[in-house]
Image (cartoon, rainbow, N blue to C red):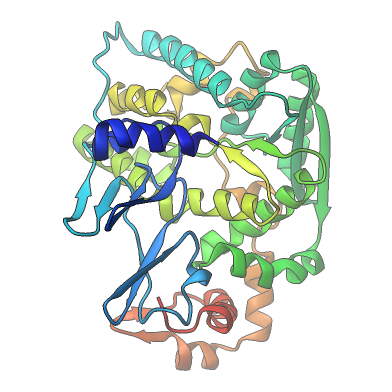
Length: 391
């Protein structure tokens, strides 16, 4: 695998190599009497550690450390640890020095950058799939990947009649992809809920909510392909969240975008990695290729929300406008669980099995932390069964 290349590079350049690696990784190297741990800049791949007496233990998942260490910590993205010297960060991502002749030029250059990133993310010799929600992010990835492969298979999941299913069908037909759907109901969601929380390793309600849909589409995809592309990262790079439209200050918007990117390892990337790995499927996120991230950071934040309707992710939509139907390109943002049609289904289910009195009695986790809803308490109870108080 690529790990052997990393090992030879480490032998030649030492720890400097980690800040130069592209893509996703979490790795350990035994170097004489010391060892080195390292994790990719954005935390695309997971890594955790903890101590038992004087010994340090590490694992790629929380469940590997439960019952082994006293307290489990997440290894910070973009850092490396030398066992006898300490923890150090890589140089931070900084915008690529590019010349931009206005917002339209930024959109055209972005399309070219993203096209190269998609091409580089495709493995040789395997049939490739795309998790396709019908939103602009996953649709763009699917459209860009299609010319590079002989056969592209797309996958969607949702409640019968969900808007995602309709839009995904349209995209698949437009680009000439083989398309498959998983239509589910509340019973299907209940059946997989415990598995989702076990693999996801979180009880955060919005994250679990989205992961249920993601888990089901990943399960479907694993029946057909060993590798998928995902559209995660578009919202974070290009100001895709509704609340960001309220910022009048360019500085506040820029900082909000940076914060969203830095939070990815605990949000969308955690969901993507765990849902894919739960089914033995490789997953790539072309939006988060280093060149794309650095280019996106170079685009002025205010250009990312433009037009008469203040449309979010404007450079992405404008730059790829010719690759997809207009209603797809300019489709408004909907959260994963909203577009899939699951909506408040799990929330309502939780409210029927957990009373407000139970919630008020159990919501305090200590240390000032509190659960936010009856739904989150339902997830927390399942989480505790598997992970206890180690985190």
